[in-house]
Amino acid sequence: MKASQPTGVRIAMWSGPRNLSTTLMRSWGARSDAFVTDEPLYAHYLRETADRRHPGYDETLAAHDADWRRVADWLTGPVPGGKRVWYQKHMAHHLLPQVERDWVDGLTNCFLIRRPAAVLVSMTEFFPDPRPEDIGLPQQVELFRRERQRTGRTPAVIDSCDVLRDPPGVLKQLCERIGVAYDDAMLSWPPGLRETDGAWAPFWYKKVEQTTGFGPPREEFDDVPDNLRPVLEACLPLYEELAQHRLK
Image 1 (cartoon, rainbow, N blue to C red):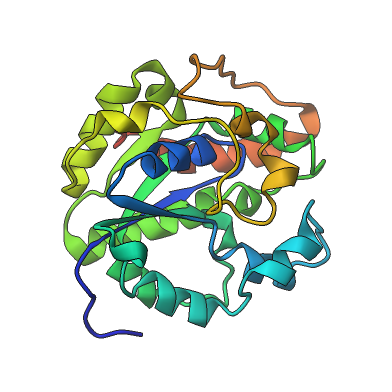
Image 2 (cartoon, rainbow, N blue to C red):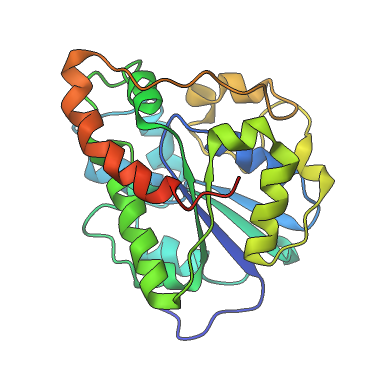
């Protein structure tokens, strides 16, 4: 990987599925100084986990690079389009064990979390037996600890519920923490899909496609079906480790 990084701010927002991740990508994409990238490791993840086929599997592998090393080199290279900010929407569970982590040190790593019960119940719409690693919390905690040890600082953590309760307040804090000026343009955007959306967008982004801003706060809960109780119990300590540092 590269020994030194080109100029520009590369924000890696590590999230789990069924979160606010795509809406947050819309928010950053509304800035005139930002380029956004949608789940750049997804193709590699799909190729290596073919036993759990996702909607848009064939389309994703046909349109996106599945070589994580080439993708990592790109993500740590020049910011596309001559922009100053590169917002990278990452799913933490795409960091499979064989994906090395050293390249991540060249990014400004942030974390988007949501109460695990809500994530698990939402995921059962597509996958009836989600595991902790499927919602990305083990990988998020791994990266969070790595970042703190490497830099001696606590990276930014935001909770999707907090964002929906106070979008400008949380976004201003996030921007301040990562050294980027806040822009009111982040609060609204036109509806529809984007050229920067992944090839899976027609399968997953039906609701986001209709949005023009952040929606109302969601009702969160802590209960899950009995078969998911062991998974929830494994996830809760991981969520709480991150949540105690979240921006409010």
